[in-house]
Length: 404
Image (tube, rainbow, N blue to C red; front, top):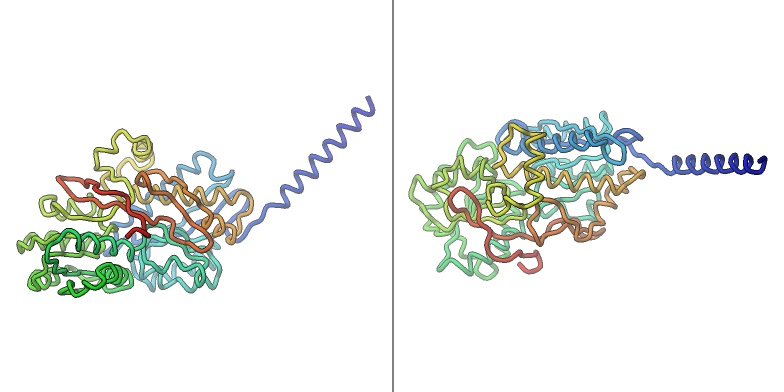
């Protein structure tokens, strides 16, 4: 009996020591604890890019839904999304506040190429993750020089290369007019288009730019038509993209029209532009579109619709930004989950750089997440789609970056 009692005592002591050891193995940086993970974000909830506010709102709802289920590894997510209005100087101010005062664990999905550019060096100097940024500029995949910054979506440069190849193969005697935002975002697309055209780069007959704050792009569209272009490469954010589609129709300019993926939302762009004006436009896709009937019986789409009904009942499901926000939030949650009890910023980046053929819901079949310590481009494949009726129709095969 005494032996049994002593055995129990020893066993309990051993368990206590093991529990203490497990507790001691927990590692935390600022913004993480036994009960909470503090995640920061900047988003244009107002201003010229405010249609993207749907992304920030979806992320907020996603983390609330996770918290309702107990959080991640028992820790609730505190999500702080601040409105920078798509103004880089404001982004700098708000990010400094979140890093230095709010002590966030990581910055997740800050939106916009110019806004992320303004904080790029700062985040890396502070060694705070600038993770899965909401911009496809190619510079976010440079782990050698910026190990604390990683993109999410296919990069703009590669996307434009794919458009260039399609133009050369499908448009007879192509004369290309380019509209792009006058910043790194727009220039990335232009650079990719030129690279894809190669020796045929002189097929670009006119390039016009605009500022994100410009009220319209009407004069630019008139210039492109007057140039004799029979191809329109539209590298614009949602507001300007919709204006460009509508103005081209108003002046009876009907070129082969290629639209950058970031402005492919049916609700935010195609409907405001007028469905009748958007017929035949081509863009690249890597996410399912809720308006495409082929996904109606897809289990991932059904799950998303039910989630939207519960957590964002007033939102417009035709807005592709909600699918984007859901998908990237799923990836972020999985990255945090893989950190387990080592919630250090270095481990967060390590986990983000360790995905192999990982399936994220609502990403097109055949496309998976792949990263490594030397590859900070999570998604490197797209499929082309054409606008028909009131929705997009996919065509062709999934194209990977290396095949472009």
